[in-house]
Image (cartoon, rainbow, N blue to C red; front, side, top):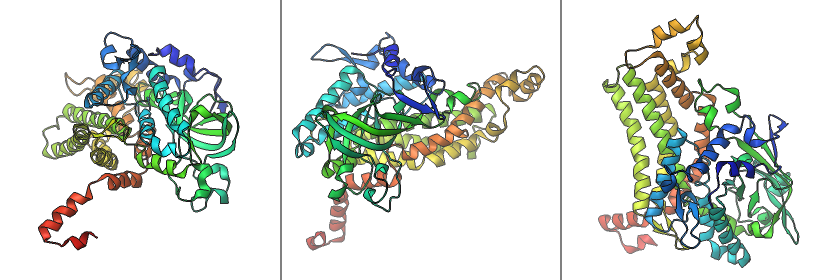
Length: 483
């Protein structure tokens, strides 16, 4: 059943051990570093119960008749993907910004594992059954589900056994109740999520000696022995008038410390299985890349809208050089949109009968979106001009001694008052220049995987044979050249 925002807040008051700035957090939902983003996630839950949003946010399960969130619905036809896109659009517009980790972008990783059930059955059929059960549990329980991926790294020129073995999450022992694991993982939003799909990092899984590190499981974020060590938040150190994005959308990243955490057998998806680890790394994003890239489309719209408003307020919209830069931003945005649209129009059936976006188009779209992101942000920054870095703060616009001067020099005309211009410049600064803007640029680069993995996904899914066939015919080559 669909949860309410308050039910979600109560669900993360489970005694979890969360630290930020070296201090133990007494209550995650009310802590100033977490409250803004927790409130946004709670708002998403509440939207599904409201007449204005219910049709877009939820669907009736045919078997139970219960209302479930569209974001977690398994995709079996193209309309399911269109419905998911509508869900994201409703959420982003209601929030007035872009949040990356809200659940729909991580649940797809479970679907990828579901597609690999035959691989898991090689070890133990219980594991594939566990996956199916957890997919159903997420759908029916409306659980805020995230995923833990990267590790603290250590010395990557050495095997884990040749250094502190805890640098990579690993199996400690098996018990009748489940497996005990130790190590660490990074995960955005872990401190205010319900559970995470914990999976292997990118590594050489061809060495059977590394099998203790080939683990995949569901972990309750309030599990005993699990510690959340969070980076310093941006939200509680800024004023919303000056940093309207930072103070609402900081998705606090967490180093999860697994200090001999027990994972019950029903939560184990695979372990000591190098082939399963390799499979999941190769197919992990076949679904989740879609909502992830869709987020970048909204970031592109934010850049374009901010830049265009800035050009219009100062009368530069029709300048040929300005139009060229706006066209470059538009081309980037529409390139993302085209890849997403085409990936659904040419969707493919998965090994387990789900409908996955066309893999080649989806992964090339991700490369287009992410590889161009920093350059596009700089073009938007250039179009906004230097005033986004020199404009005084909100207090200066309000103080009696300085307000008249701010009104005089920041009022452009009857349409653009000093207050509207201040708001736009503050938004542009936070979008492009702030600490959080720099954080987001790096986050987008690595959030799903590093650039080399993006390109490797393209290589593995592109149809090279078609190009070879064409050149063989055009050049009159013999069949011998194909080996």
